[in-house]
Length: 130
Image 1: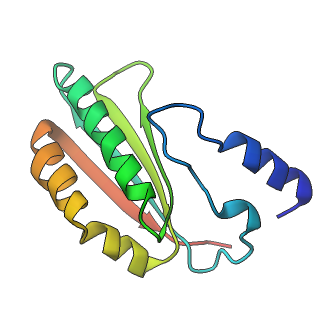
Image 2: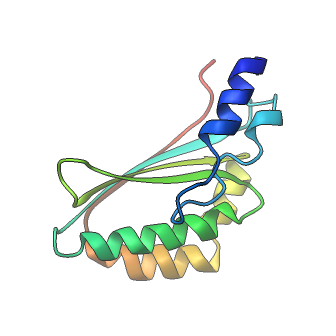
């Protein structure tokens, strides 16, 4: 990465909010993006369950970012509809993403606890295009 971008990345991704994990903790020194996998997910819940979903996602993000193959796990909540969430996840490779989906915390936090609170759940896996 260009030096200016590396400095900006180091500044922009420092975790200052208590609900965020370290965020892109290895990216500034990383130069090989070929195997990186990005997952973008969209969730919709009820307005009544939105705060519970936000808390569950914050916990899940912290646990996910502790995984060795997870580079980043960001959770965003819509500014005009608090029942809508967007997740942005970056993994070293497909194997790291599969390890995430097979983890105990994914099964408990996501499949057993979170999914029953959702009306819609969509996610897609992306690899580098260029």
